[in-house]
Length: 183
Image 1 (cartoon, rainbow, N blue to C red):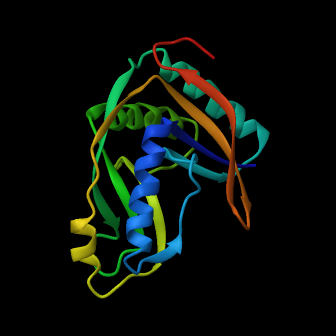
Image 2: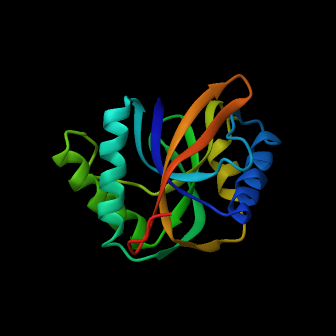
């Protein structure tokens, strides 16, 4: 199974992402664009893993979630990866310390179980994976604005991803409610 851990976002956030995607497409950006409704903040991408590792991840999620309170995330601003040269990914920023703290806490437990992830984490929502940008791409990005929005993060999700010609299809495998209750 192709697996990742993420924070799902409400529909209001998906609408912001779609709005920004349309602005970029209309100004000469092209690439692959996440499907509306698939918006999420990825914490960890595990790739193709077996059932035993999935079980370990679920146990870690449930254990960590008991000690993490719910928190708010504000979506505002835009950025690109890499930060130098031509951009390959464009994203909306996620502000607030909660996602970073959740990442750090989960990362410690994941490393103890043999997973290896970066210590640094930039919370973001992917708007698109770019294959081409206009010559004035920096100016265009600076001119695309949207109303910031804040949402409450109450859970962390383990999802499977099936790649199709029409975009990825995500299915929730497990959901751990922050504050300790399992859903």
